[in-house]
Amino acid sequence: MKAIKIVLLVIGSIILLASFGLLIGGIVLYGANTSFTDNQGFISSANQKLATSSYVIAAKSQH
Image (cartoon, rainbow, N blue to C red; front, side, top):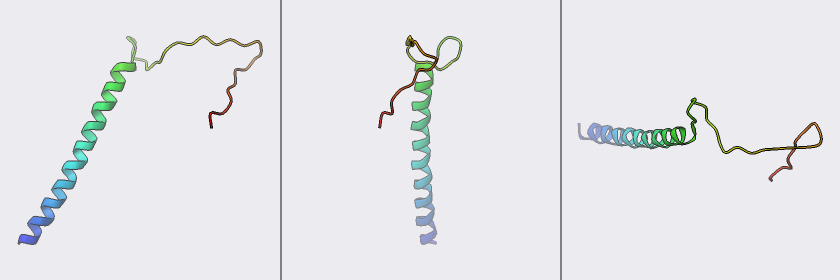
C-alpha cells in the first residue's frame, strides 16, 4: 500500500509541474496578445515604409 502512495505522489507532482508550465505559458501568450494587438484586434508591429525602383523588395539571408 505504501508503494502506491509514493507512485501517486510522484505522478501528482509531475502533473502539478506541467500545469504550472502551461499556466506560465498562457500568461506569457496573454501578455504578448494584449501588447501587440491594435484596437481592431489585429496583431501588428511598428510601421516601416519601404520603397524600391524595381518590382521586388528582397533581403539577404541573415545566416
